Length: 247
Ligand code: NDP
Ligand code: 8X3
Image (cartoon, rainbow, N blue to C red; front, side):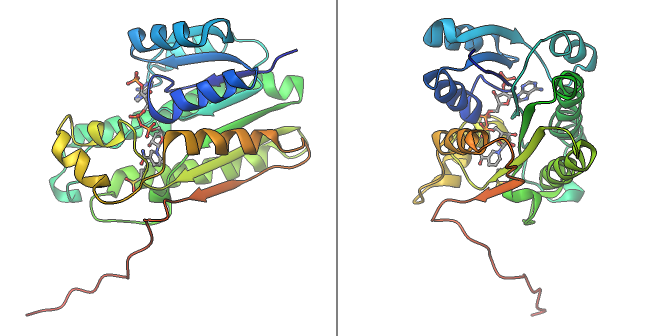
């Protein structure tokens, strides 16, 4: 029997690439996201592989539990929906942007996990793969709340594993660095020039790279849990610790 992956944020970037990869590998897909027309496009492209396309805002707790809580036999939940908004210093940010990132990257991910986990525990199998970020471990100016939401993802995955000890349910955090998707268009609110500058002269990760990682962690034998993967473009590395000097 084909396995089923439920993808949040399947309408773009990593989510779409993962949907394509898993469809090609013979899995059934449940695709979700807010943009209905994108869901329909993907459903058209992938045909019968798409079992359901569910328009869903992960911030809507009631809807998440109503729609995702009712699903049977999910083998893999990809908690991918998320975003960064802005790159301003903490004293200058739009507080609504902080709320949106917390509501999506933290609370949305919690709701989706909580909605599908009981059935995984009941069937004593399944895998939750969360998309964290290098920003969850490595701070940078303007990363403030975005980075902190991804630190939550890392720690939530570890704590889920602690709860799940003795159950055959796996949990993995995939933490990519700079990757080219709609991420920067969203972060800079449609300012294409700013978005393009993020990747200028460098070769960022591609959504397909992340899809391959999701496939790899999932394809390991059932006794093996990959706790986390951190992956960067060869063109990205860490900066030195910063020192402020007078004069
Ligand atoms: P994209 O902007 O291309 O895709 C983001 C996806 O998240 C879209 O499908 C969007 O769908 C969905 N999404 C956003 N908000 C919501 C919401 N409230 N409810 C449901 N779905 C939502 O970016 P990426 O593919 O790059 O990002 C995917 C994940 O990877 C994010 O969690 C991001 O933080 C993380 N990440 C990205 C990196 C990068 O450099 N690109 C690096 C490391 C991590 P829709 O708008 O239709 O709802
Ligand atoms: C996305 C990568 O470096 O823009 O999570 O925060 S970064």
